[in-house]
Length: 140
Image (cartoon, one colour):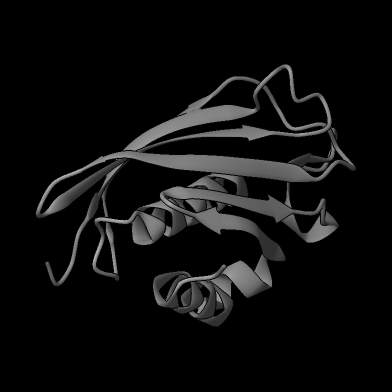
C-alpha cells in the first residue's frame, strides 16, 4: 500500500521538468528503494557516430533515482537535495536500449541520507554506471 510519503515522492518526481524532458518513469518506490527507467532517445545522444546516450543524461537519471530513494526511506521526513554524488561510468549504454537505474538509501542520520545506485541497460549483468551519494534530510 502506498504511504503518504510515497505519494509525495511520486508527485515530486512527476513535477520535475528535467525528468519529464528526459522521459524518466518511476517504476518502484518503497522503503528507501527506487527504480527509474529512461528510454533511448536520439535527442540525448552524446556521440553521433556511435549513437551512445550522453553521460549527463545517465547522471541525471541516477541522481533523480537516488533522491527518490532517499525521500522514500522510512526515517526520512520528506524533501531532499544532493550533497555529493560520485558516478563511475563502467561502459557506454547500448544504443536503442532503455536505461534502468535502481537506488537504495542504506543509511540515514538526522541530516544526511547515504545512497548507492546502479544503472543498466538490457545487458543487466554489466552495469552502465554505479553511484554513491549523500543527500540532505530536510525537516527532521
